Length: 300
Image (cartoon, rainbow, N blue to C red):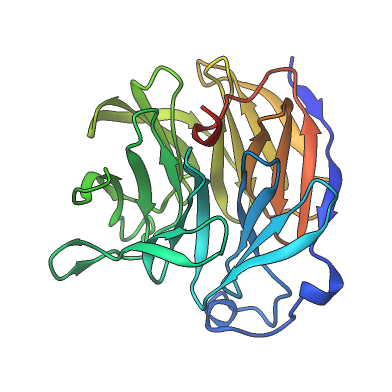
């Protein structure tokens, strides 16, 4: 039986941080001014929740008391965010590549803008850490079904980035499964979650793990459950799908706000609670799940 799981608004962008301005990004989407566009949630070891504002190039940090602050504002286009176990904040930025921020100052301390000499990324979207510290990140650019040039890269500190999957129609969210032997990628334009076997930085045997239908966008952010299942944010449909370890849909987590559910993070201090960025209303939702989220790399 399909479980219907409700959500509630945990917090929302406060009025003084809602810019309601046009940017190059908002104009490219064909809309008017936007107050914000939330993505990339993640918790640090102090229990603070980070998320990004794609539209205005900001990174927010939200305390346990619900207070919002601008952690960084740098004129980029941040999308995915993950926190290293040493506290550094890694961001997949569509304009600048893979960025690293100092958690104490919010200052940029690292940048990976090219994957080979003279070869810039098309436009990064999301990232994930493997348990060995390898970073996998998606580079969809403007790929789509008619032009499937999206890629997934692997990178280890001190080395060069290398493409491990190519020819994809907008690879978006990415996660490493708990056994570290598989990688899952949300393919937004084809309404699928793809799964491949993984050994180190080698990824192969790509196949379809789950398919969806409906909505104005498609599968976006992913998060891993402790039992090896997934939760999948379906942007443009107002739901998050809860999948069991075999890829079967077990639950439909329904937005109580808008339909732009973009990305996800389990609370390491309360792993039954899932947090969801909802970008239409500038809200962060939360839901209680029957399963626990896997402890993120930042806390392992």
